[in-house]
Amino acid sequence: MTDTNYQLKFPIGEFVKPDATDEHQIKIWINTIKNFPAKIKAETSKLSDKELEKTYRPNGWTIRQVIHHCADSHMNSLIRFKLTLTENTPTIKAYREDAWAELSDAKHFPIDSSIKTLEGIHDRWTYLLENLTEEELQKDFRHPESGEIISLKTNIGIYAWHCDHHLQHIINAKKKV
Image (tube, rainbow, N blue to C red; front, side, top):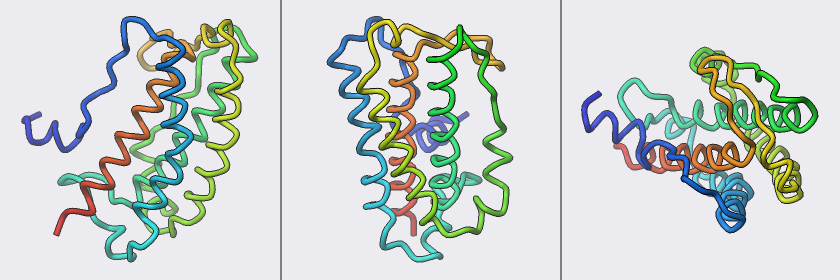
């Protein structure tokens, strides 16, 4: 991937797991997750259907697809958190996000329902995250594709990054002519 393509795909860079994660960092990440629906709503509330079809890179998703993807992804993440909290190192269910983004509801459906979905999910998710104990933060799951074991503590960081990553995609797409 050329530097330009990489920068367009990962405008804030890829998630880098810190060597150590303290309580302060977790609070920052939770705050990012908490505020994401309001930020995405502010960035998209006045966009026309034509503007929602802008992409952040050649052959990339449209703004509409990014919003629907975030709702799909964050629904899955909340379920993964709950599975991890109630089971011993579960293997989570992967899904083909690229294929989901090609379904009619992601390509053509208005964004309002996904914005509402994000608002509701993030309200519950934030409450859950803010009330995790240190022991719960250490619980982990296995990703079926990579086999990687991921702690909830790290996954909070991954999803804070995911929020900022896709918010930047939307901001960048809006700038395109």
